[in-house]
Image (tube, rainbow, N blue to C red; front, top):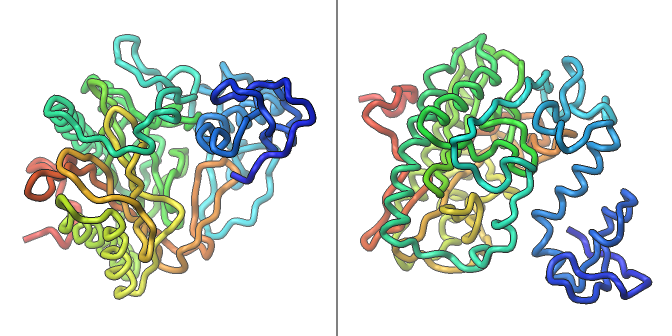
Amino acid sequence: MAGGSEVAETTLSCVKCGKPAQLQCPKCMELKLPREGAAFCTQDCFKASWSSHKSVHLKAKLSSLGQNSESVSDDWQYCLKKGQARTPKLPQFDWTGSLRPYPISPNSIVPAHIDKPDWALDGIPKIEPNSDLQHVVEIKSPQQIEKMRECCRIAREVLDVAARMIRPGVTTDEIDKAVHEATIAAGGYPSPLNYHFFPKSCCTSVNEVICHGIPDARKLEDGDIVNVDVTVYYNGVHGDLNETYFVGNVDETSKQLVQCTYECLEKAIAIVKPGVRFREIGEVINRHASMSGFSVVKSYCGHGIGELFHCAPNIPHYGRNKAVGVMKAGQTFTIEPMINAGVWRDRMWPDGWTAVTTDGKHSAQFEHTLLVTEKGVEVLTARLPSSPDVFPWLKP
């Protein structure tokens, strides 16, 4: 985020560290929010607080629409009718493709006995933004690794539930409900639910949507491609994976795009071992995508994962990136390339989540959670013998 503006008085305290504050968040000033909750002593404190602080802006916007924070979980930015943006303040939008937002149902309920992450109730992560693990790549203990294995296996089984549902006529909201119920049945919490106010239990990204699509009432149509992104919180850790599926009869370019994206992930995983630089992942992915005539999204990256949903390391998927560090045994992170049929650039829908291609062409993604081992890599979210046979290139 851009730097803040100077505060005339120096009696305010920094939101991050409590020291005398000399900067103020420009977005808070624009929204005319109280200065006490928008002051920072330095740019470093401002940047370190951004991932949690920005939720203050969303709450203010919701309040201006007549919604309070308690109602966010039930009716957050509902689509009023087909073709309208998810916020009444922005009914018009220059859509890049043919997809439009549809109505969103009320959030699914999580039973009281389920262990929940710290954003489950109010939508704001507390531990994650300020953790040292945003800067240091954690080496997991054997106990943590075993927890990750179990959680990632559950996440795989949940995603497989979604995979079996993919067909024309099914809504992404129905997929979300199945993901939610399968996660709860396994004793887990669907990590995306209320994370920075995300209103659903998984992400469903159709056609030109690159990532973070919100499940809604639109029925999948013959010829669509749809990515389902599942993360499960179980026994104190997160497991994250996604796959892109064909809906009915898909055109040849989309088939090639989805297969290429799968291959990009597989080729990237193949180089993972101790001593390899994180930046090399992007080189491998970029090379394969470019040779196939596709482009690599630059705005979204893979990430460290464990007791935190998102943490270090940062894993760019594009070439000539500046990712810092080398792989070491015991690290866990995701690789999740997003590959576009056209240009690599993305654009955000007015709902603040749905990222789409700027030219309206299709995008595909695949993701695994990985463990660096002494000799190589273990794919913690690997397909199981029971996983549905949905990818033609994997058939004997």
